[in-house]
Length: 140
Image 1: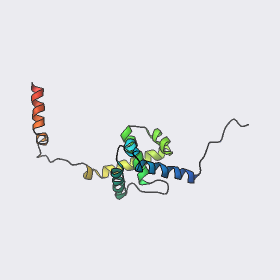
Image 2 (image 1 turned 180 degrees about the horizontal axis):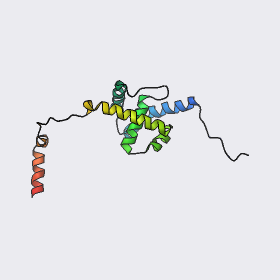
Image 3 (image 1 turned 45 degrees about the vertical axis):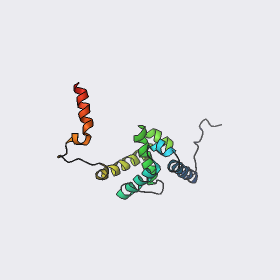
Image 4 (image 1 turned 135 degrees about the vertical axis):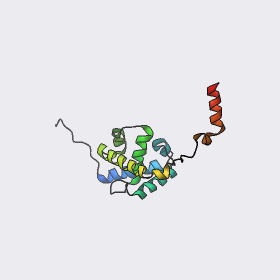
C-alpha cells in the first residue's frame, strides 16, 4: 500500500456545477447580505456596472458575479485571500487577480460613486444645528 494518497480531484463539470450552485445560493437567498454585505439587487447592479467598465469580464471559468462576490467578501469581512480561495475553490493567485481587477474597476467608477463637495461649501452647512449643539456640549 502506498504511503502517499492521490489527491481527491473533481471533474470540471462537477466543479462548475458547484460554482453555479454557490452563486445561485448567494444571489437568491438571504445569505447575500451576510456574505457580501450587500443586497441581491444592489449586487446585480454593481456587477452590471463592473461589466460596463470593461475591466472585469466574464470568462469561460469565472463570471463577473463570482469575481465581485470574492472582492466584497474580502473587504466586507476583512478576510485573507487564503480563506476566500478555500470558500470559492479557487487558487490564491486567481483570487488575488480577481480582487485587483475588481478594485481597478471600482476605482474607475469613483466619479459615479464619490461626490466631492466644492470648495465653496462650508462643512457646517451640511450638519446645521446638530454641529452647533455638539460644539456647545463640547465647550460646556
